[in-house]
Image 1 (cartoon, helix red, strand yellow):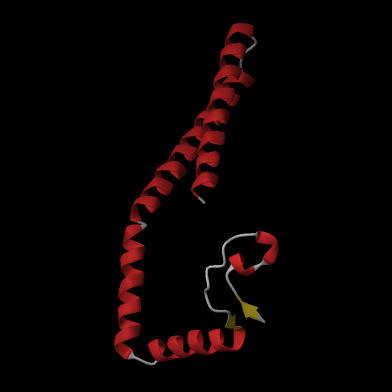
Image 2: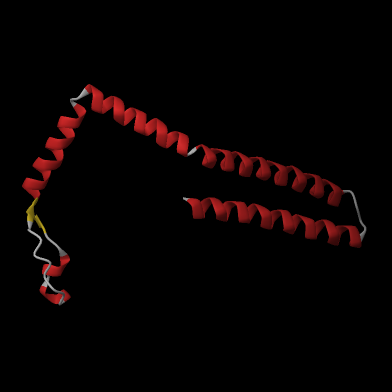
Length: 121
């Protein structure tokens, strides 16, 4: 297998960038050789660990946001249970309509939290 710039494909009809074609064998040799060299150095491994720790620290706001979302979800679920219990004890159509509207509102809030979590993924 060989890797080359897409400009070298005739059907693309682009100007050829003149980049060299790389063989899979050469690329594997270069990548694995460099990786082996990096991993055999204690200092390089320690630096990689420090870099990973720093990246982990950069994620701390995401963990805080996640915790806030989980707390909000728990609050929504608690409020939903309270509303359902109140609905079960009443026959007043006005109260039922109000509680039903509140349940739908809480459900929408929960969907918004889920959608935001998916968008961040």
